[in-house]
Length: 302
Length: 268
Ligand SMILES: Nc1ncnc2c1ncn2[C@@H]1O[C@H](COP(=O)(O)OP(=O)(O)OP(=O)(O)O)[C@@H](O)[C@H]1O
Ligand SMILES: [Mg+2]
Image (cartoon, rainbow over all chains, first blue to last red; front, side, top):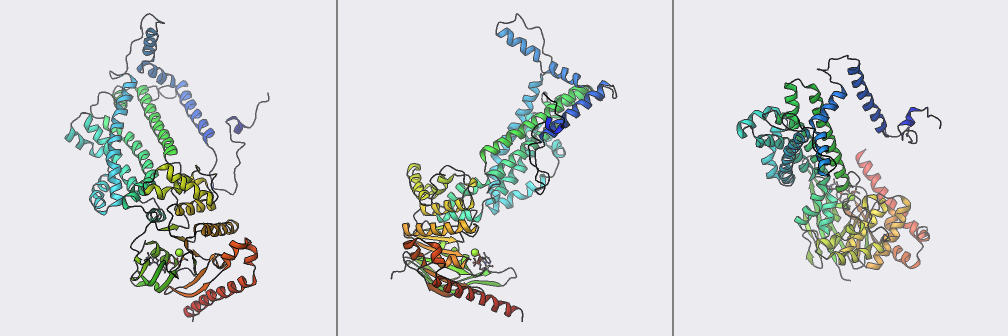
């Protein structure tokens, strides 16, 4: 087999793709380029630590982060437990240490629990309020000032207030993330109500629709794409606020893990936590995009 | 002859941007008889859409009265179906669901309403696209879905505002023939707005020419080209008929004449 010399061909797709010289600038696939970027970043990280350019306290090596991952996620422990359960091994020798008294997945679980509870509360309140604001000037008049006032305030600024109101338990954290999720969702639901064309509304009326039928069968359906976009923005914003929320006396949570690790200068765990936070955010976004693709495939097409 | 739909001395005045008012329609009278195909033609801004919106019931006239079988029209209803120029289908429904939408609103069972919708989609030649998403159809096919949808509630009157305006010339001519065939089959009264003189002549049994500022009906013609087409089936021959061309030139000169008058009035 002959070695391909054109590096564009190594990463697939690039050569078959036709680049329209007179089309919109910047179209075409970029995944293969991104993969190169990621590989280069990981390699430079590794090289910098391998050559000991930076002390490990500031920049731990990829191996260190990886071994921390193995340790605090208790992979060995669970693997052995599974083998014992299947009768393939005698006893569990690896102990589960975790970090801050919890293995990694419990940290992730607690963070997800807080974010999803808040997100759920935001969905059941912000969407109806946003829709009401779009459809009724009284609702708009009532809810506009508080939402527009608090929306631009960074959550960290009202964090102390949630502590005074709710104490340091989970409810304060959930309230903080809830506020972060609420505004983008309410605003997009409100904008979504305006998405349908006057022709669609008139068409429904001229087929004998009642006012309520127009709202249910036309206005709300047409609002779906905007609402889903709002949900995507909202959960991303909620996740961003999480670390701030967990700064206050939480026992477990991915944000707590990072903050405690920083207190002990365990930079490798800080790295690990940041990578996990980033990956979870990425997974959220991909899932939301997929949801959009299945729920509103017509988005932007008509 | 019986009058089904009667426009009686209608005026429509809108507030304008500068704080004054625009008279979109000024004392318009118009009768619609059974099985008539009425086409409105006229320069932009002469009040065609306003007239259609009044007939549909989306607007209430400033003065005058519109009656259907002697009863005043107070709002939109399933007895008057509307076909729009564009953006009126519901993209979250597929072709047959769009076509059956009117019956769904009336609470008809899915099996029954799909049966009616299938018949109408058959009539407009879309029976092979029943489960297609509408956003994947071409513009001409989307307009046919719009027509089938308007037919599904079996309205007495079909109102169409430039339904072929966004189509290419070839698709447009096919659609004209299709609309005439649907009209003959369903025997509905049609009110049709267009900017194309040729289209107007080809379709109309009654052609009204409107004029702007203030909007009014200036000319009215009774025509037979559409009935002739339905008997003979040769559109090209009719459109090149000397009689057809003569009337076409006459109407073009009316519309042109008005534009020139208007220009001269503005540029002394
Ligand atoms: N809702 C409205 N508010 C204010 N003015 C309006 C409104 N609707 C129509 N008009 C005015 O009434 C006049 C007639 O408008 P209309 O849309 O009926 O014209 P048209 O004949 O349909 O024109 P076109 O051929 O461009 O569609 C125009 O001068 C327009 O500016
Ligand atoms: Mg118009």
